[in-house]
Length: 432
Image (cartoon, rainbow, N blue to C red; front, side, top):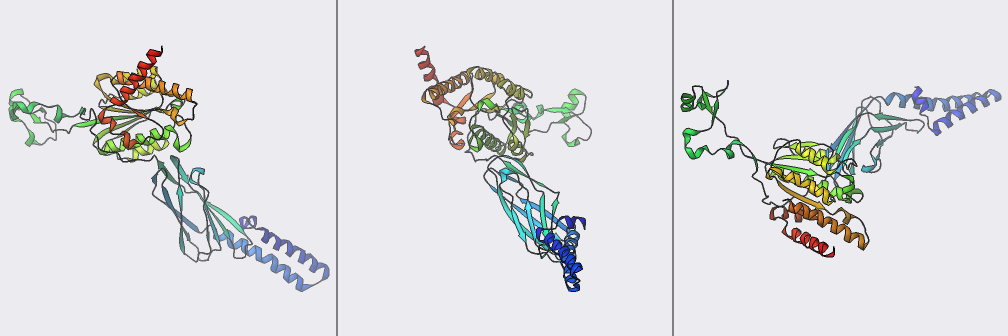
């Protein structure tokens, strides 16, 4: 009842004020009929407050998101189901779901009336152009009586999480360098050339099938030996995302960093579907495995929240890659590099690892004067040349570049880029 009185609207308070005035006037004038009017004016808002105050605790709400994970630029459908749990009908209900700014303005939906134990569903759509994880809710329900004398709000504490992942674009099938590097017993074993008698064996372990016992090896070693089960060959790949804040330029969804994040997601999904044992490394120290059973969700959920970091340097990225010696293919997505940073990256070519670099000319995301543009292009070509000389395959990325069109260069090599960079170095040397 107290909550109901606190929720009286301006109209309800006016009724109470009029009731007080009518009662005072009835006492002064001695008019009993006016006193009856005063009682009626006072009872109406009090009954409304009692009605709304009691009914507000008998509502149930359920929210569902379709889907819970969506790419940047897509839309999700939010369905709200409200049920009246009491035996009395409700008045008009105003539903308002709280949303973060990136998902748009708060939706407001009006339900005229819910009968006893009646349920009703309403839906609205949200769209996000920025990656991230967003809380949808809580839902605020404003209830009023049929006369508009009392209005109360109730917030349902339940929230749902909507994950907006980077956009994934399909890539053409390309035979990549080093795609057969990895590990496994079936590829490394060459015992078959000696005949079946030399099959790879190991010591018997409790629980092994006795049908796998290799009797000739058992007789030779004096211990019970069994044939090894062949393990499939694994192609391994590491996708390295450069999160250095000073290596990227631009603002919002069209920034160079957003291009790199979307490219990392597309390449990771493409390689995982191609059968690679995948590893995603970012400058923040995240090390995400995307094996066959992991699915794309783990990778995309991490990329939904990755951010640039002022503290990350090239040495930091290299340390994260070297924490695990997976070998195989390394695909890096880098912002602008200096020649010194490119020389450091040459160290990842150890153990004959195959390295492919998508080198973003992030200065192209800025409007630079002609002289500054020429200097930026020269620095970009110089860093690319250092990587090429150390054995990296380099694919240059300009503003507006499309990854599906650039992806085949990862398989063909970067001869065109190498020629351009070599010419730039020759011209620079002649000027000096």
